[in-house]
Image 1 (cartoon, helix red, strand yellow):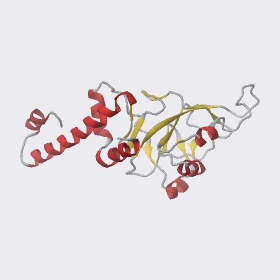
Image 2 (cartoon, helix red, strand yellow):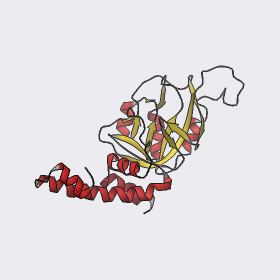
Image 3 (cartoon, one colour):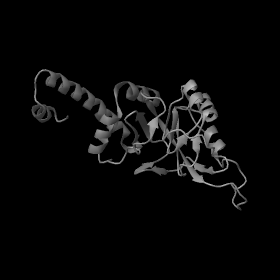
Image 4 (cartoon, helix red, strand yellow):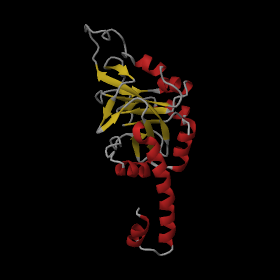
Length: 223
């Protein structure tokens, strides 16, 4: 499958719990972002490729580095470099200001990006809701990044919680979690997850027919 078909299959047929279970079996046991990263709109599903962004606290002042007099650092370059189907994934700063807002959503939507995942806050929530742009974050906070932080780099490896994220990793997000599927095993993980969904459907039918939980697990190997 190409990415368009892959993303549609994941959105329509899978959920993060079943893919996470498969990744556990494959030995990738730290693939969910911290539980506090949640969708702005309940029920949102987001699938796409990671475009990692490295943030940092960077108070306004007269520093000597190349970003010292550049508002927002490399944020505009990172935003403008988004490709169709990519997700802007940002981390590295404190929780003292918002990392994403309405105008950023407008630009990302124009570029046909899939969405944004922030290890921090967003603002302009009403505008983002009106746009219908999928965003996952730690919540909303109106305080601006401009005089408090900068983007240091983008398309670089980052870490959120216990999860290492590389450019191009497959993200699958729903209201139960934000899951990172490594490129090295994504094909096998999705194939196994699709099989597991079919098996779980058969288990549900058997249990409704009177089979015990113990017998169901012994018979089908899932529960």
